[in-house]
Structures are given as structure tokens and as C-alpha cells.
Image (tube, rainbow, N blue to C red; front, top):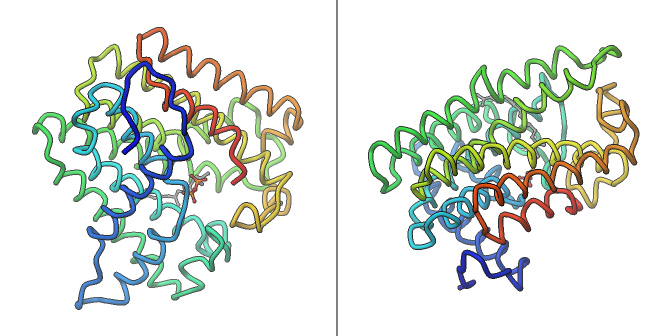
Length: 303
Ligand code: GRG
């Protein structure tokens, strides 16, 4: 077990990440065990949620909880798993022919290629509902569960991820998207769930309003940095490294950070955001090294 000390720098960050990833995956495997009824649906749900991925949202949730109260962070595991279910759902639907129409995800055929379109749609639907249901099962105080459910539902509906996806669809092929419009789209499409991940972890740990507000600011900044680097990787990397199709933004004529401000400035902006994110935590006296290292990881990652 990686030692939990609120102020000590963590010496083996890679081990920290893989331990948390394993905990989340074990929990997911049990929660999404194959069922005899509608077994093809469960298979597709497992195919798309137990197929790797960085588990960034789940890990952020556990880290925020641990930063506030190390002794209860395991209670946040159902919430971390729920975030990963919702994220997996969004990837399945995003890859569908009517959306981004992709055939590669996490290095494997996308759900609708491995199964079929209707099954993929239903697997996404079911993962969304299972995710919400996992949240409600966490052994937390009722007011914490309610607050987490409110954060999560707000983050994924029309005010969050789904709204962001709609804007993305509308903006595809538009050559007039401004930087402010691009940021607004990413804030909803990718940022809202990342923000909810950190805030929900904080709620599970018993964070104060001041701490929750610092978590929210930290997460919004790393969320944007995450998306900028996603755009950079799409331009600079390859499918084998990314586990998904590379160079897609150009082919689909999407507005991206590199397109609007260039590669060098995009990377610089991501670095500044990460610096600012860490400052948000420091100002609220949240000194938890993994959160700081996760912020670095968001822009140093290769996929
Ligand atoms: C929530 C009801 C409901 C609908 C969802 C399809 C859709 C509407 C939204 C799409 C959201 C989406 C796919 C955003 C992109 C986020 C993104 C950059 C994903 C990649 O995240 P990583 O790199 O992936 O963390 P891994 O594979 O590591 O988990």
C-alpha cells in the first residue's frame, strides 16, 4: 500500500497511479459481473469499461477524498467506479457512427464495431444508469450522497457533457469558432466530468466549502489543460501510442487549440494552467502531493 501522508512528496508516483487504477478496476469488475439475463449487454458493458484507460477521473476522485481525509478514501471507491462507468458510456456514444464515427478506442475496436450499433447504444445507456446507481450505494452520509449525485448529474446533462457534445457537433466544419467558444465547448464536454470527479471526491472526504471551491478551480484548470494536450497529441502522435485514431481533428475539420494558437503556444498555455491549478490548492492549504503530480501528468501523458 502506497503511504498516505498529506504533506510528504510521493516518491513513486507510477506505483501510486497503478495501485489506484487496480483498486478501481477490481471494484468495477465486481460491480459489472456478467449476468445471465441480457448477457450480451453485460458483455458489451464490460468490454467497454474494463478495457484499460488511464482511470484519470476515478483516480482524481480518490485523490481528492484522500487529500481531505486519508482514512476514508476507500469509501469513495464506488463513486470513482461510477465516474469511470459514465466516462466509458460517453466514449461508446462518442464513437458511434452518428457522432465521431470511430473504430478504435483504447487500442481495440470500438463497442459498435466489436458488437453492433444497437448493442453499443444500450451498453452506453446501461453504463450510465449503473454508474449513477453505484454512486447511490456508496457508504457515505445521506447529504454527501445527495451532493455527489447532484454534482454528477449536473456535470453530464445538457448543462455539462451532453451540452458540450452538442456544441461540438454544431461547430464541426465551422471555420469561425473563436478561442472563447472552443473553451466553452471543452469546459462542458470534457471539463465538467473532470471537475465533478475532483469535487465528488472532496465531498466524500468531508471537504469544507472553501476546499470544494479550491478543488473546483483546480479541476477546471487541469480539465482545460487536459483538452489542450488532447488536441496536441491528436496532431503530433500516432494511433499505436494513442490507442485511438490520430489526426482526426484535421480530417473532420474541427477547431482545435493548435489550429487557433499554434502548437508551441498551446503547450505553453497548458503548462500555465497546470501551474495555476496547483496554486489554487496551495492557496486553500491543500498540500497533497499526488494531486499536484496528477496535474503534471495531465500534460506530460503520451495518450
Ligand atoms: C452523458 C447522457 C450523456 C451523453 C454523453 C457522447 C457524449 C454525450 C459526450 C462525449 C463526451 C466525450 C467523449 C468527451 C471526450 C473526452 C475525452 C477527451 C476522452 C478521453 O479521455 P481519456 O484520455 O481516456 O481520459 P481514457 O481511455 O484514458 O479513459
